[in-house]
Amino acid sequence: MDLGIKGRTALVCAASKGLGYGCAEALAREGVNLVINARSGGPLEAAADRLRALGVAVTTVAADVTTDEGRDALLAACPAPDILVNNAGGPPPGLWSDWGRAEWQAAVEANMLTPIFLMTAILPGMVAKRWGRVVNITSQSVKGPIPQLGLSNAARAGLTGFVAGTSRQVAQYGVTVNNLLPGSHDTDRIVALEEGIAKAQNISRAEAGEQRRAAIPAKRYGTIEEFGAACAFLCSAHAGFIVGQNILLDGGATNVTL
Ligand code: NAP
Image 1 (cartoon, rainbow, N blue to C red):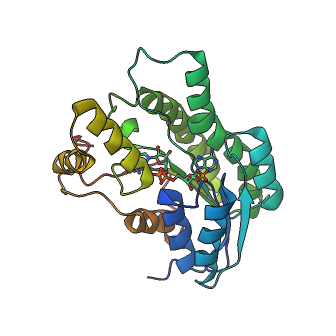
Image 2 (tube, rainbow, N blue to C red):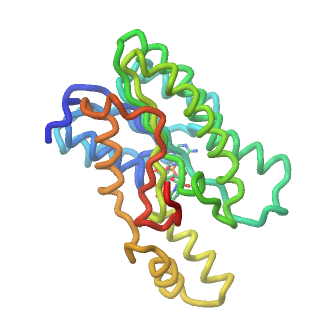
Image 3 (cartoon, rainbow, N blue to C red):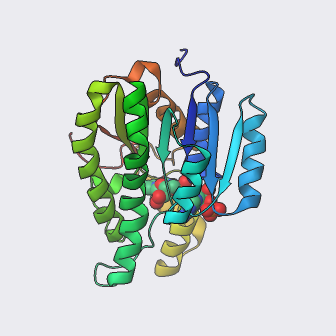
């Protein structure tokens, strides 16, 4: 299927590896020119080279997207993208009783306010053009709370509330805003979570991985290619009637009916 977005421009945050990179690569395969971001310059440039090999223009912005300065740098490089993919690192695991003001502020800043501020800056340009696509990478924790990820459960729920209201206000201008909710995907983030489980249960990382995969109905982790393909479809010309949705990509892991 031709997704009908060849020649469009996308700003993809936190995209030198993992899910953000998967989204960038899927968009590049559709002929979308890219501005990609991460904090570390080396891996970011390596990712950009791989994406350029797919035949699209790629600009890099090495910056922390969770800071005002980082977002200013991104917006200076790409003030009016057709497509915005919001992403940043996830908060650390812990117990509900572990976190004080500093940890809460960091989580809210990274996983709620950062995507909200980028949408606030970029949506007016999309509305003026009468076309735009925003995809926020959130988490399955929005649909079913993950006990050790209370910071994610809460901060991402705040973003989800903002999207629910805002998406319905901009839809009339041809602009869609939706959230993609990853379950367990095979990225460095999962490696870190497996190491945490291994340590807590005194088992090997391989055993921790087996335990996690066994709990997923699909009996495997998702891939960044699958995740990117879903993102590219939400950004496509065909997805204009998908508004304000929270789409789980979790191999069936979240045990809900709706
Ligand atoms: P990952 O493989 O660790 O990749 C994270 C990417 O984001 C890297 O390119 C990293 O580059 C960049 N990044 C991190 N913090 C950044 C910042 N402050 N500013 C700019 N770039 C930043 O992680 P992932 O698994 O793709 O996860 C992406 C998001 O999805 C996270 O919020 C995670 O919590 C969420 N999520 C993931 C899963 C999963 O199964 N993987 C499940 C649920 C939710 P630098 O380090 O160089 O900045």
